[in-house]
Image 1 (spheres, rainbow, N blue to C red):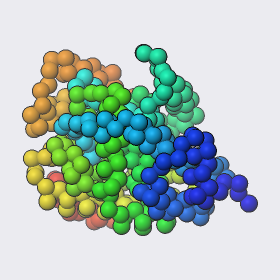
Image 2: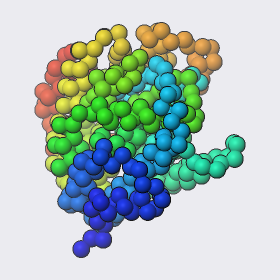
Image 3: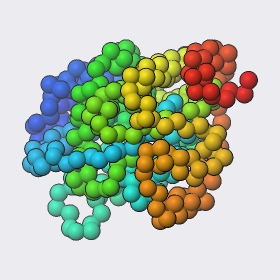
Length: 383
């Protein structure tokens, strides 16, 4: 019998005991926590996977306790304006990460960093200029992880101080995409699709205000494909948001995200050929919802970016984005972007190999499922 129990009440009490804090906003997360725990409990994870998932839930609960304490101790945090954030979305593996990293090189951009998604709460008692020990620990962890799992590094380079996806921060609301694994597993997969995500975006805004209060910037730069599930909720909570939408052949996107999801699901006994159709449907559905919501919004709020155009001339794409939203591109900013391009050639961290067939998918089926998207945005599929 496994020693990794997923009883929600026991996990909450364990997190409270570990932090010495009690206020969790429990009523806001109770349902999502219960469904997530049920998913981790009943899916066929090996013992190492169960322990890893349990540590993750405990970590989220403990972090949320510390966030709630910080928000209560400093009510001025929730008065902070978040002016003209820029958000990147689109199918995963469509070039959003490369574009995110490029635009983050602009000194005016304030990207969400990986270590901040894990520790958004302020560290107490640090001397001026002293590095947060949680950042230093995460830096060592990811440097070690890059050596232990070079395959994942080829798929998605992760470092403590690198720009990272919003889903990791949104996990604290217990109502999001999490790692992209949970939404492939039941009952969380079905539960997630039925949720009103506006409360999650309200909490996500608070978390960004908390981070901005600690380390302010001129303009937030954010990214995740999961924003397609809730375009209107995003706009409701960030009324002056600018949205950059990346496009790429869905055959390549689906194969690549299947490979990444399979890697993240280590310890879960799901066959890759069963995983493929789930991944395709999840991201195709997110795209359907995102496009439908986009059609109800002001078109000037969006700009489209083609992956192949970005590969051909990344600086030209960045200039077009800035021009569309009326943002200045200073001499210093352009130089920083050009330096980033020079220092980060395509394939710097290795080549990511994948195919549709190993995940039980045929190219024709993918093209059929994404047919409306392909025609709508003129996506080149090599046909």
